[in-house]
Image (cartoon, rainbow, N blue to C red; front, side, top):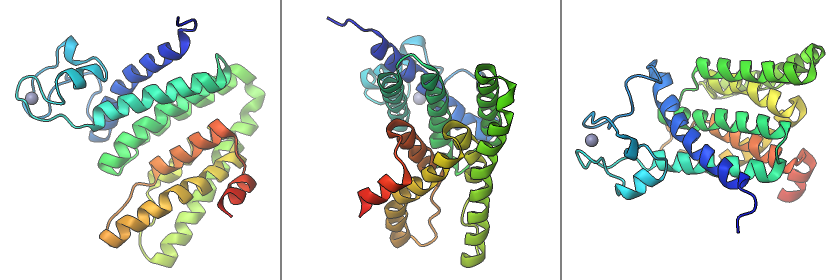
Length: 254
Ligand SMILES: [Zn+2]
């Protein structure tokens, strides 16, 4: 018997939120409203009914096709729903009902939108950064009191400044844009989530994860630009789950 319904609850809420983050990640970069028009098929504009809006299940039952025009629906949508569900579920298992869970869910939400938007458009919209920055700052002040403002400033600005320097240096050496502005602004949120020390480790870890993948694309197509934001988010999530330090990562590697 299922004695604890919370893990399932967080999974389901995650898939529903994931469905919403799909919409946000696709529409905000195009400066479209996230509420209107209602969800529709991108091919035939068929407006989705309530049975076609159930996360994961609708995709499976409709065989991955639009009910009206039978055009294939991108697998990205259900994958994002599943990913969000699994991450919410995992965060509940690791943190329980706690403040950490709240911040973890906030950061997952941010990351999923970044993944959708950065992979599709190579953009992390300023609106998204601004909204989540505000969420983080307000929650931190409500929980810890206003005296935390010094920590907030350092945690947000040090990782931001660090990546800005890395980018400036990279641009000089390679004589081209090595990183987008969105990746640098994203570090404001990573810093607030992890604290500035761990945020720097997240950059290191994100780079390690991105490196083999970027090499693969580089050899296929030298002009290929790869979004870096999702890797920074994945690095940050791993650090938050395992609380690993730079030393441990180096030990794992050698
Ligand atoms: Zn259609």
